[in-house]
Image (cartoon, rainbow, N blue to C red; front, side, top):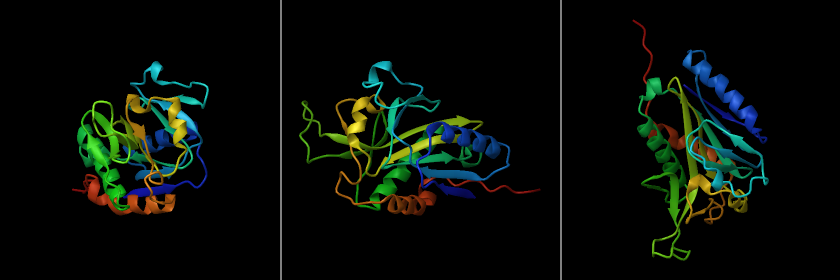
Length: 223
């Protein structure tokens, strides 16, 4: 069973990490169910294990938190749904690439509920949307904007950290970093794309699409 947790107030980043670490330990010791935590953070930047100092363009703009998740710099803040996934890959398959692909598929299925076509891109973790309404890049490549970031960490094959989906954040705050180390493309949100989606709308879509996107958990049986 997966427990769904929703926080109504903004959660400080350090408090979120402490909660996840404790829950992951409990899951790995069979003392707690898997969990998915839906929340928002106050404005902040996080640095993943591959973060490059040069990609932090405005270091004094918001607090910067070093984190053990994969990836590079990411912005979190109000209007962005953060989805922390504490799932047991011992039961869902010990395949990190498949798991990240399933997270991307989950986001894509969720966006489709609102008529938004999210897409994967080779070499770029996360979910992207093509922007034919914007001028192409200098080489003629269509411009694409990132709508969701993914960065996970595993401890004893239990995941934590997870996904962020832009509902209606202040997109200018992404200008303080090179998001995920990728330049040349932008960042968008559901509202920026003309979809007046609320957090409650997104949460309902996430719950509705979860089971058909994620690898099923094997059921424990007794002899």
